Each structure stands twice: as C-alpha cells, then as structure tokens.
Length: 234
Image (cartoon, rainbow, N blue to C red; front, side):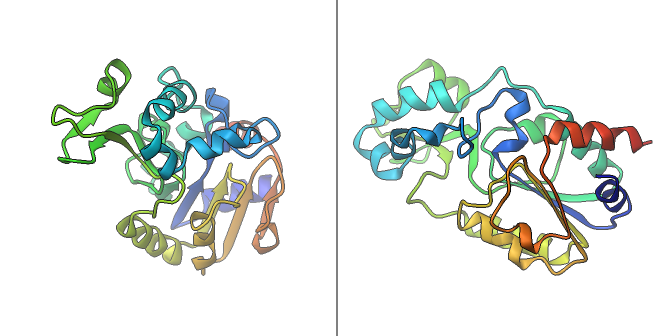
C-alpha cells in the first residue's frame, strides 16, 4: 500500500477511474459483488432501454427506490481525490457512477461515462427536469412526452464526446488509478487499455480481469487505503 501511496503523491498527471465500489462506503449499493443489485437478474433487466420504454412506471418505481440515494454523502475516498485535484496531482476523474459524490466532495473535472441522476430529459420535446421534479411527480412532461433520466441504460451507447475526452486524459496520464470497479462493464472497462504511462494501480475489494495489466493491485476497502493516504497529505 505504501508503494502505491508514494506513486500517487509523486505523480505529475494522475487520472482516476472509479466504479460503484467508490460509493459503497457512502451507503450506495454496488452492482456486481456478492451482495450487489445484479445478484437479482430482474434488476438488470429493469435497467435496460427496452424495459424503460415498455414499462416506464415499473422502471421509475425501481429507480427511485434503488438508484437514487439523496442521503448519501462523500466518503474519505471522494474527499481525498478532491484534495489531490486541488493540489494539481489529479487531472481528471472518469467515473462509471451516476451519483454526484465526486462533485459533492468538490472535485471539478469529473467525466461521467454513464450520466447522472441529477438531470432528466423529455424524449419528445427535450425539456430538462431536475431530480426533485422526478421524485415528486410522475414521468410525464408537460408536453405529454416521457421524461427519461440522463443515465445510460443497457442497450444505450455512451456519449462519444465524453469517451473521447476520457481516452485523451488516460493516454496522457503518467499514473492511472482504478478504484472500486469490477472492470467487467464494457465499453467503459476497455478504456484502461489506452493507458500508456508508467504506473497502473488497481484498488478493488475483489480481483478483476485486468489485474494482470497493473503494476500494483490492492485488494482492500477504498476507505482503508484512502484513510492511510490522507495521513500523508499536507
């Protein structure tokens, strides 16, 4: 762990790639662990484009109960990444998460591969709605169209501009820090293969299929690692 901390603190161009495990300490469940949401395959089906279009009422019941966690606060991992960005070490955070905990911790340059729960768009007229509207009203726009959360569902493509920007940051990084992701969700997981720098560090409770590419693998809780890292920040 100390080797990884030393590399992080001495990096000149550190890019971070985070997944659901980044937010579990904040009370947001992950997807693919032994206790994750996708242990029930029905949940995975509900979060697909075709299911949303066919049964938006069922989708929204699930979405509001399982995907929106307004009570969640940034944990030590989010907070330390924000400190590292302020120090000029972290250049970008690329995240698969749809929560806004990185932003809530005051990280600025956050690229959200899978969108965000905070905004929603009418599929008919394009009018934008905030999260409060969705939580307190139904999914119908004033024009009669269906409002969809600005999150990437299964069967939907990632935003090309965000993907290109993410690749650019990864290609230029001297260190790529991958945290809290199974690296099983494509195409997002394939982005780490664009890394050409010196140190690839993977921090995840469980092993990932890309561990063999890493210079350092830490199978530990992010909170433990970043509590220790925080001690070395001045």
